[in-house]
Amino acid sequence: MSTAQSLERVVKSESEDQAEPPAPTTAPALDATIVEGAAALLSLTSDWQRLIDASPRGRIFQTPQHLAIWAEHFASDPKVGFKCVVVRRNGKVALIWPLAFWKIGPLRLAQTAGAPIAQYEDILVEHNDEATSLFAAALAEVERAGIDLILMERVRADSALASVLPPQTVALGEEDGAPFVDLTSGDVETALAGRKGKVKRHQRRRIAALTEEGELRLEVAPDGPTTRQWLREATEMKRAWLTEKGFLSRAFLDERTNQCLEAFAERHGGAGVKTGMTASRLTVGGRPVATEIAYRLGSDYLLFLGAFAPEYGRFGPGNVLTEMVLRWCVQNGITRYDMLPPRYRNKHEWETGEVVVHDFGVPLSRRGRFYLRAVLGYGKPRLKRLYYALPLPVRSRLANLMLRL
Image (cartoon, rainbow, N blue to C red; front, side, top):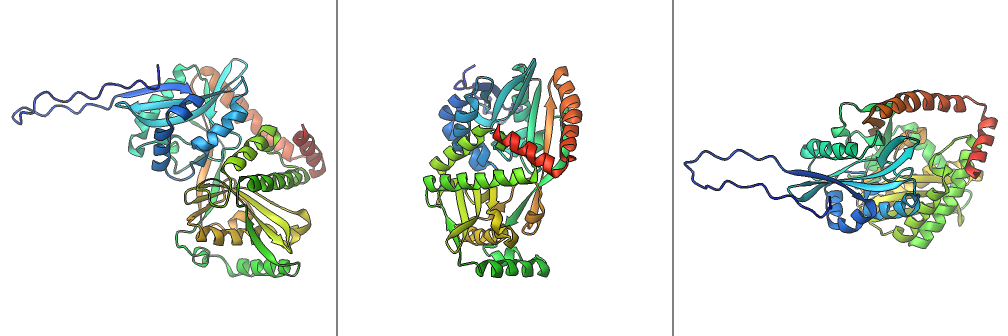
């Protein structure tokens, strides 16, 4: 069924006679279809943007700008299908759910498009009070398409998706959190007034120690090419840190991640973007020592990647950069500095609040239920615990091997 097809409008009562009893309210006519993702990005541009504008925070990863570039690098794989579930209410687009379809043997899976880069998964919906019925129609269409299991990662507790999860939904792993700094006061000191005196004194010592090494300056990449170059440098530092600590990151294991991020930075990067990527860095005596890469959507700043030069690690340059960036955010109309999941000790130093996030699985068949329980619920968590139980030198060597593959 074509996505351009619309349903007939609700038929009004033929009689306007006040003596007649009022006609019963007709339920909204819902029509759900699955269309090719690339075609949806082109044909539903205005509807897509309308739903983005009507949505709460954290939707940068569902914007057409982000998904178009993601599709170039990940959906070009013949094993991955980029689809969009579109639900219309009385002919008007009311829900968009971008999905990636793929197979593992006979098992057919779906996940919100954007992985492994997307840090939040959600649906785009016009009215949250109608989201349940709209999502039910979308879910039924996905089930008719033969999908066995839907995976959902980092679903925010305040998201539209969290409010419509069906009864068969299974929580995966433990809940996490996305710390943030609320900057709606328009003043950094006011926003951080609740920090303990010990933390404030420690920050002053960091700044003083770094100042002895040279003049401190905040630089923000002015355009796309510069943003891309700083991103590349920060990624190299981050990969080195992951290797040293023996951490594995699914995003960094796939070279397409770097290609996708760099393409987004090139096309949508810069200091003045409202929907795109921002790169900032701290220099000491002219030398870059710490970098932040963030997504921006309107008044939200979403910290995607932080990295620092190892030789300056003892000075805490990342924390010094954070304070500088917070002041830049206030000056540039940003009201929330979102540090994204997962929780980390260094984020706790700055946070003024947190949004809970969780991973979920929605089985739609017997195969899906089995894979959810046996692989994702039992096998994968145990393999992860086994890996992190290894000695650090062994993990470091394994991480280095995996990141080079």
